[in-house]
Image (cartoon, rainbow, N blue to C red):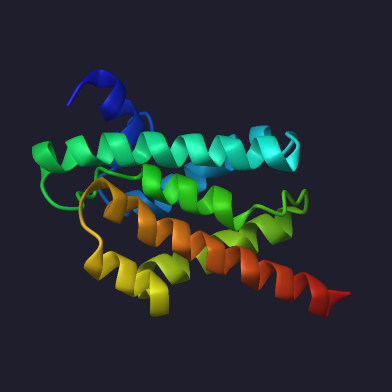
Length: 149
């Protein structure tokens, strides 16, 4: 695995946190989100697509070095959080709620998230379940916003 792949996989070293690297990476995604949310929706989605593609590429190599779905690989949590915040909210409470919902889906792995986690292997598998958790998070956030209105 080269240096670029290592930086991508670990989200610039966040994946080397001794405990709860996925949770820390989900939090570390928020500053990136705050920058990307200023983009138009198409550019925001394009950016997520690039992160996911780079993540699949780098995670494929990370498995060769660290083993299957290694804890050092946290780019999947970053991508999932960005998907979960696709509404590009500016409300800190909504960002915090999306974080909590995403972490719950990522840890519990309900429905499609669990299926992807168990059935899809390699770099794509590492990324797929977290992106699915992000989609479920985005759906929950949309429902919550409608109920609050």
